[in-house]
Image (cartoon, rainbow, N blue to C red):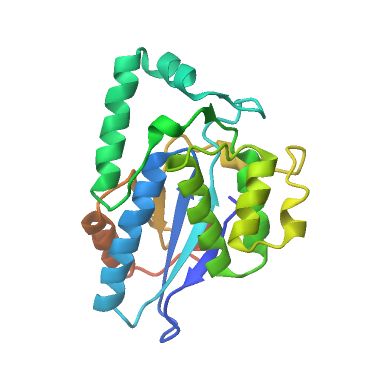
Length: 231
């Protein structure tokens, strides 16, 4: 599976811990899981400064059949969950889980359920630059645009504006079109976030920081696979 941006947190040792994170930009649990992982990494780095930690973001398109122009958000979720009340209850659950990790989401502002292929392609281009901080900045900006400001991250002009705000070179987003080659295996995953530690230990869902921290400590007890980023 194609990897995304990598970031190395410690040059002190060759003892590695590689964390692959399968994600989609329309999944609020991926944003929540990203925050939980940050908390876990901070604690892990304090406890094990001898271990070099690398994160690899892996794109997953959960809903590849959504039209390029997207779908009405409210109608999509009413059909998916059965009723407006079910949608409201799910949004309250997500919003509260986000608050628990310091995130203030505003799902009521979302009007379109986007097709995320174009946004993922933009991220893959930025990943190819080899500038982890820029990738992380764009990833955060995309999540915030969708879940906090209700922007349509499937729209090419919106993506160009977000990329410009983040400092992405203009030539990388000028041709963010749906006909660009897209790794076919990214549609195979059914559940995200999905974390893989050193290619050997996996954790599914937006688990709390303590669970992710424990997985990190377990993973470094075993030799990493030759190429854990493709797990």
